[in-house]
Length: 240
Ligand code: SF4
Image 1 (cartoon, rainbow, N blue to C red):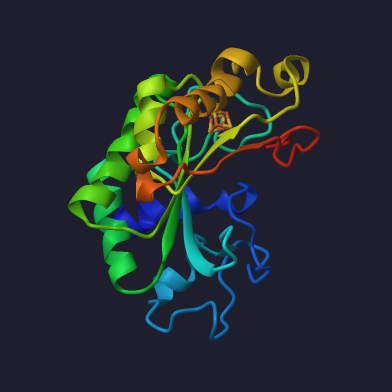
Image 2: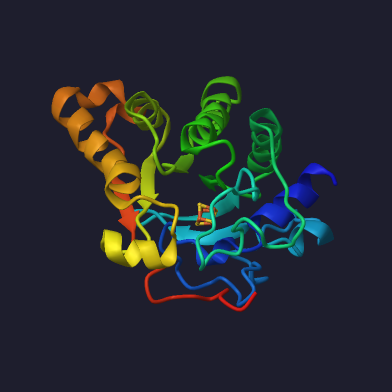
């Protein structure tokens, strides 16, 4: 599998992941519609079949082509609604941080994508997985010189120093709460813990904001942090 094949595998379900609001130009399978405004002409046929790039609108109203992907589709959790949950039989793929950063950097230089939304399945715990996401972000920012839009997911159970580092690297952070409370979450994702794993990172962001000046963070601003209650009442993969 080459790096583009890995990306296609990892991004294939990402149209279901909420990131920046789309302006509605994404085709039903998450592929890019071939219009002049959304389809860079330099896409190869293989890239055109890929589902990794999504039109997205940033909070400032700017429209960009956003690469939405996981770093890894290997996951030890078993959230019922998720196509990547442990135990499902499908081919899993994983990028090393430098592999993804190399690929993204090349695509960015060619003008294929302008920003990135990066999440991951959990392997070896949330802290270890968060480290890999942060390593990737750091390579992009510091070695590749990428200054464009970066939206990073915070993994369940991430630690405060990791949240701090994420705020220094990303334009936006988010946490998938999945459900509005512990009781609902237990029915959807039996191994996620609502307060300790999912709410805590959001509280850490608030704490850091209260105690540290904005200039310490990416672009001298506090990155906005959002939470998504996406899974509750929505089971697109329950029969897979
Ligand atoms: S932890 Fe994330 S990737 Fe893993 S099964 Fe749950 S929602 Fe899916």
